[in-house]
Image 1: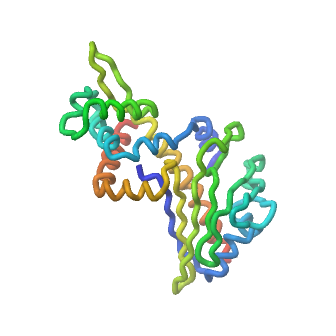
Image 2 (image 1 turned 60 degrees about the horizontal axis):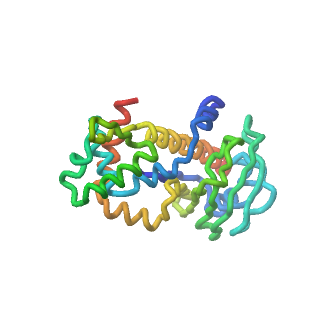
Image 3 (image 1 turned 135 degrees about the vertical axis):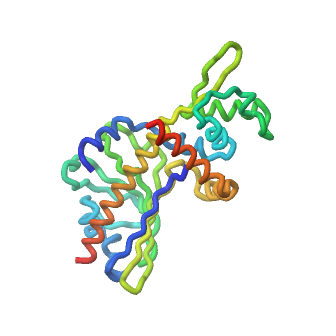
Length: 115
Length: 150
């Protein structure tokens, strides 16, 4: 791992656990999946076909909003929600980074024990 | 989100050799590139100084969890805590587990690092089970979307 990628990673680092946790729920995951189409959806559209109430869906959306996975946009009296891929991208980058570090460490271990 | 890391590696060395490389603090330090203050003891904090070229200013800290001879070695830590300005102690640590298995050619080492999402693993397993194939499918959708956007 080069200096550059380490420092850029550190600079962008902020708590990721809430993002992971926000996605660790079936309802929220399905909301994110719907919003992945790229279009903004209203709460009514997102409640359609769900067993949950509008209030419950709104609560889930607000939680996703707090970790930055969705944003709400007001059009007239209605809030519409859209997907923001950035927190997930960042999280993926972070996991990839840790994963690469392990690859390197394990290959050092391999040479160490096989020599 | 599948938030754990899993690595499998075949080593042409006996289990006892690999076990020593993992759990003897000096040997661990050799390949991991850290100078540890003392031996690993379950339940105790292990401290040291990173020796990876360019990162010698960084401290190393982990809490040893389990040492089951020639089977399992685990510790919790803050993975690659590379920014000295950040107080990592505020974040929930992740769990690193090394599992050893004897094979005909030597040792199979399975490494997992879990806990990136701060959810107790038993609950997460339950969530995965409930989601069935749906979870994987939806993650694929999200990843496709992210790939298109980036």
